[in-house]
Image (cartoon, rainbow, N blue to C red; front, side, top):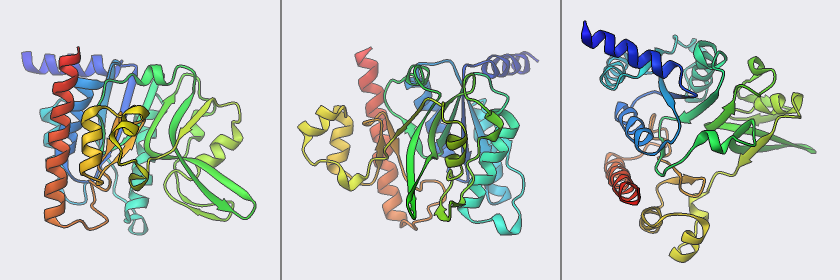
Length: 285
């Protein structure tokens, strides 16, 4: 009875958290554990982390649920997808739509969407990042004849649900916009167009191949020493906000088809890097 009371108390407190973090997990329950670990060590805000379980089968569904139970994380099962909505993009869009309907639209503080393989690896305040903005996200664009289709990717997005207008028209669907093919998040073009007063900040995703091979240049851009070392030894990750977030890239569904050997090496590099970051910033504090 005492354990049940404690669990209910933890859940009740977390449900009142200012920052609500939503992620969508297809596989890799170990990434849930890594999210829990990195948010605990690096996020400066009062937060709740919520998992939307989009496992493709009963075994993976159970593994994700068990991981959430161990870490006292709220877990929602994404409803069954229609036969024509089984591809990764459609499943992602359906999961996002469900998450907003389940908890996102009703949250009245800061709402966060983050990929299951995107990790916070340096001290950071999402609330402070949003201080002068209503929406901060990753820039995506497509060209349609004489128009530039600008929208936000769902990989990492911060939203001030207190100040965003017409919240229930937020739509991360993909498909076509103004005749141009877009990926997940493309329909945010319409949201931004219909709400021009939104204080919007979109940052560019970092192309790994474009990163300098010069340590001094990377440090000058704001990458810390451990991140700089990783960039110089491995081009297998993406980085956001100058290394505040690291993106494993296709870590959940492995749609690029990485080999088992490649994944093992990549996993080892990621976990070693996270432990180095935690140790380094604990010393700094």
